[in-house]
Amino acid sequence: MPACHLRPEDKKAFIGKVGQQLVQTHGKRRYYAPDDIRRAADICGYPVDIVCWAYCFFSSPQDFAAIHEAAGEACDYVAMKTELLTDLAKGGTFALPDIDLSWLEWPDIDLSAIFDWFDFS
View 1 (cartoon, rainbow, N blue to C red):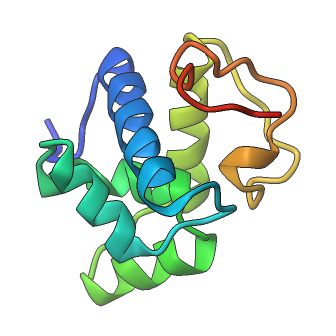
View 2 (cartoon, one colour; view 1 turned 180 degrees about the vertical axis):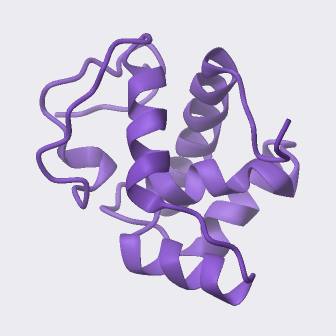
View 3 (tube, one colour; view 1 turned 90 degrees about the vertical axis):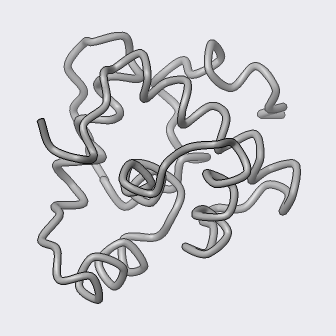
């Protein structure tokens, strides 16, 4: 099993908790800095080997690529984000018209179950 593997239900909990921490600490942002994402995951008690899921969800595509390039890893932003969004959409398939959208810009999926702490209005 790869180090960054998470079950779908664990991804939901992870993204929800890290997202809540980011919003509480930094307010609503389209994207968050990688250091802020890493710190939020650490505050929430998550190990560093799964933070890549938060990077693909909360950071810009450019920051995601830079993080993995610096680490010598070949992680696919589009594939990871698609997998994550599919898991967050309760296991259905998820077609992305524009993968570069920020997590705040997705109008067609109901993420209220994991983001009940976030006011989308």
